[in-house]
Length: 392
Image (cartoon, rainbow, N blue to C red; front, side, top):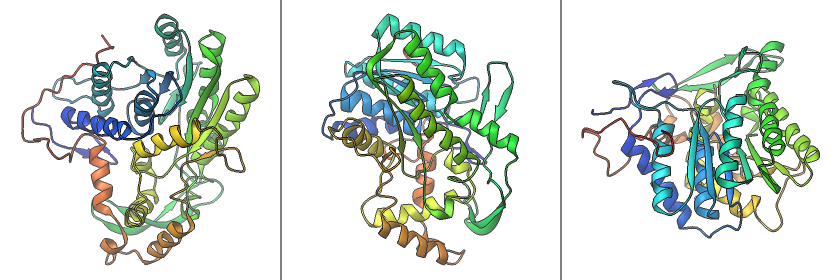
């Protein structure tokens, strides 16, 4: 079929297999161009098919030379529907890894479930013995708990409504939006989905089964950002979940002697998650403009390569006063944030092109789904049915 981008809300409902393969190849080529890292040799990546999770898997494999086991929750092509971008990304990664002599296998299913944890443990026992790195990069809107009830996360404020500028990226119109506060139940549900409970469950399952190597490292991802996003993120419902995630990192390090659990605070980037948060896409489009002009812009793979090489496996790991890893350091530089603040006050429908990198935002958005890559003939018929080698 000829595959074209089709959008609904903040997602693209189609994905292009050739474009996704090109996206993975570009990330692999970037890591190959950088210094190698003395780090993980057997890595488990939870949420391995897109964004920071995929970039983590690529960095582990190609910077450290690690065998990687990925857990994803993606759909293959069916009838006239393409597969999800994560499915195509994973298929491409496994093919590239095999060509380069790297172990790469993937399990597809609900990472929150007891059954998936058991499957992962068995595969580690069979193929790897133990893993020395666990990356927790799940970004799900909902979670089915052990009692079979399903809870959903919300993107709301806590305590009071918040009003600020936002952008309709389809019309490029600036307007004001008021985000209402979450209820106590919504906050609790968001923590259940996006907090650290499942991360802790994974470490417990792996350690209990004897497949977590002595001195293993585990890392989960978070975001802080500037004051303009704090009501929506740091101090919002998702921020409460991220606070719980951080508290869990301290708990894991205390409960499992020798295991080092970290939170890595990463840069704001265009992801399926960030695209859904009111106010944040406008901030990102302004941030992109400023950071590109200053030569400091990074995507997921640059961030994760720097995380692995300069932070996670550095001889003296650099932490902030709270004990977190910070690879948002370029984003939060005073001169960057000062320039963003000036443009934030200035931005309007009339000044949009001067203040924002809207084209860069849309490029990154569509590239998540395999579109807008040079060298890909999008008018050409392509087979949407692509298999992931390790998944029968």
